[in-house]
Image 1 (cartoon, helix red, strand yellow):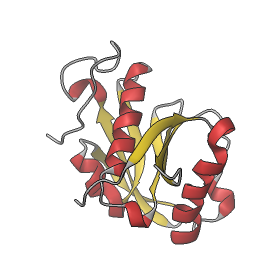
Image 2: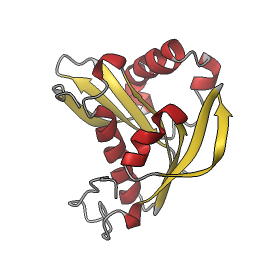
Image 3: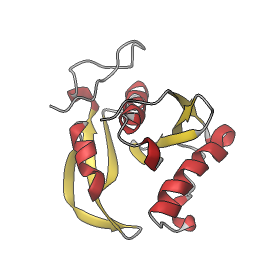
Length: 165
């Protein structure tokens, strides 16, 4: 892994941070991965918990969201910033928020090319590969309470490390 850039990760909302979130997701999903615009944007965005990663120059370089039902998704990091731990930081933040919100388990639909990344964070594949937007995916889950034996986040001072077991 290369050295992490000087970035700030912060909670975001669709109402306040939509332009920043859209810029990253458009670059990664619509332009790079060729996902149609009408399949990228949905009714979940206004109600999801978002996170945004910005550089000290205020450039948006990463994002992700936690849906009300416990699904983590739309994890995106601009290509020039990959390999520096930004995706891991996004996942850690979202899992901790899920814990604080009372979830015992979270899940995601991982592109098969990224399944190893999620597996290293403790996620386990469930079921067969399926197609989503023309890209093969796997459903993966993480039992939050199983990660370290404590109810992390609920007391506001302990966090999951997301170290793979």
